[in-house]
Image (tube, rainbow, N blue to C red):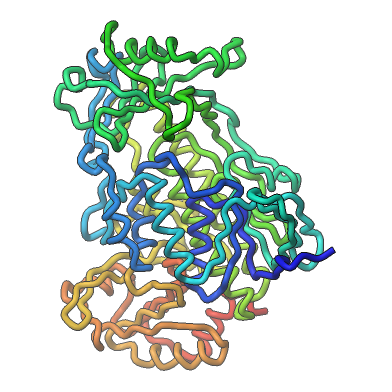
Length: 540
């Protein structure tokens, strides 16, 4: 039986969180019209992730969204500290300026941390996705899926009126969160520690000025009432969130967290036995009951099951340390979107999609180890333990190794390279360099807006002509920029950071990673470029 609402789409996205919405945005900007379904009636109603790393902001910057996102910055933008202590009023174990420790220097990135709550970011991304042509459907849940044929056939239900209809898609992105219902249904497991614990999170109003003592912290870790307790300020002055771990295996459960018990936990965490406080609901009209939060740590064994690809929390779950979870999901979507678009437009062979797992799964495994180290340092360590972890290398320095990259001989097998010493090697994020275009200061990263990009050194005119001809013959969109011809390098750093001579060129993928380079002039530039681009796109 068919329904008037049945329809076909190139890509069906299941999950309307920040990963799914970002995937919809990236695909729409690449000329596709994906359909996104999400069973909840709206974007997030709680802050969830509260900081997005500079690499994430670089991605949104290239799409022209950075200014709009920063206009929604939370109060955390003015609260850079992180503390560890017995209680809020007790002696500190550590106190660090977390943002200063993690802030990239201006020569490393044109972007800073995005101190914006996830619910605010999702509003921006959803609106941008819809403006770009994405079909976003909230209050719509997936009820059945057949992904065994030459496409994906899904049955969805409008939860408002119960109407069911079918969606046929060439591919499906499963961005359905840490429960990973679709991944589990398709029989793909995950490796890692698994469930690390549970915590009750609840909100309260209280005047903590005396206990805070002028400290401007975005997050505090306490040993009382239980080691691992966390306290965070919320958007409304005087409103706080407390998270208290509990152990179900010891017979404890979320039902134990009555209003009286929660109030007692707040007083013990703050260190003021007679503190006046009021528990409040997360959303007006709701009960002030605590939220049951599961802390997990795992990476999916596979990122693909036929025409279904997993992204975000459906592919990996990290401890909430270092603000890696949401940013890693956005990077998943960024990596996957251009590959799907290239395959669907006939510009690339289907095996290009295999490189999504080959590139992103090792990054997730590295990130899991990083977050576990940070988790231990924050709960049990000192300031020295926290600053010993090199977050900037993890954010900017991971390297892809797959057929979608022309890895050069003698490249280290390490998957992390220090971004403070940029080499411009294929597989790495293309380095940031300040340039001048018609009197405006721009970053090289501002040139990566969705197409392949050829960055040609000042004396590499032959490469510029060859690149245009080769890309046209392959039907691939390519932007060619000859440094010194309309785009200037006033600080004379481009050649050094990209590892080129004055006659060389670099090919950058649509996701801003170096795919291939020729450090100097080529003997036969047009066939060399065409061969390189064909291999990257799995064109036989």
